[in-house]
Image (cartoon, rainbow, N blue to C red; front, side, top):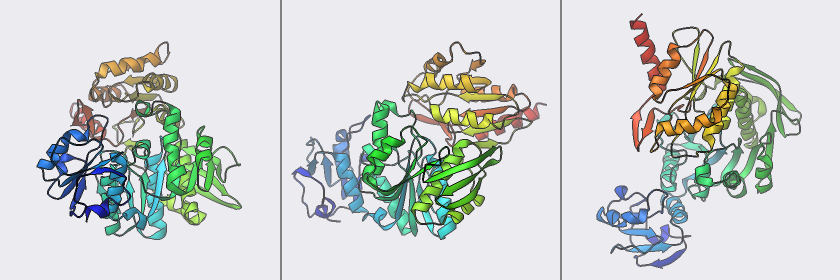
Length: 486
């Protein structure tokens, strides 16, 4: 593709490049540069891409896009914002594949992964088409699963993924849209047919600084990126989203019949949820085999999304009959006795409270919370999560999560601040594997043990290195060892 065609729409401050040069690839990682590449130097939070312009040139890059004039002989295009430019270049290079599919975006602190999986299942069940998915757990093209490192990739990776989806025959794509992706321009130019807001609770304040900034980032989905919205009005940030929405919005609620879509006669059990859903004069009985009150909300936003896409209520609800749970979300793993172990990706105050509350409703014995907090992330939520565990669990095991570059014990000490003065017994075990073994060894009949925080992850990150750690394997291996030693 000609450079001038790629740059159409990019605000250029200065250029030394031949606009008729042929560009064979676009990248923002100098290690991916090759002959004929256009390298985009992005000023990151940990690393400044401008420092790698020479490396990109040595790897064959023909041109670079940058904010600062490079100390290199490589031809360059100077722009005001490399991230904005990268988003435009990415769409142009891959011929704007998202424009050729029906896009659905789900944003919020909790519930995004389950909601997107349920929406994908609903669309495939009702339309018989192939649906792509971009999410925390995984990216998917129909039934094919692709590995993912973060909720929303950089714009060049994202557009490449959409191109793969389109070429594979996908008619729809469902995305978890993170607050980072919205403010860092990773989803610039993407128009979602429907945008969904699940909830907003404390998370990512290390990046956004305040809850207001965090909310404003999420609200960009409804003010700039979607044709129709679906918003949970039971959340305290709902009005913030509604007032900023520049599209028609359908509201949903599990508490109020004033919403456009609402649930009543809610029944919660260990096997899942059941309720009656109302939409205007229409009603339907909903059953979903994923337990917890949060599953009521997740299913309501899926119903709202389907209705906004013009699908019939009865068929949307019927799709739940064959829906399955998501790995690492209220995932029950086998044990060797009359107790239950649940793995859940509850790494925020709200999600920890949700899983403990949900499991309290179905527990016959003690509720045991095994949890930690990630390093190099929002430190203010650590004592809050400690307080939640002390208030809602019968016993807590405070351990390590992904310490990253922090000392695990220092993180634990900050969690314990929120547990001071509590009557709930707890223990600290820094080594997470040892902590899981401890929970198994000291279980009591009827216990529900929540392994919170890791969820779908199969690693523990320490000092920038990801060490293999799959809690399913840890439990299975230790149970097998216990059986041998009996």
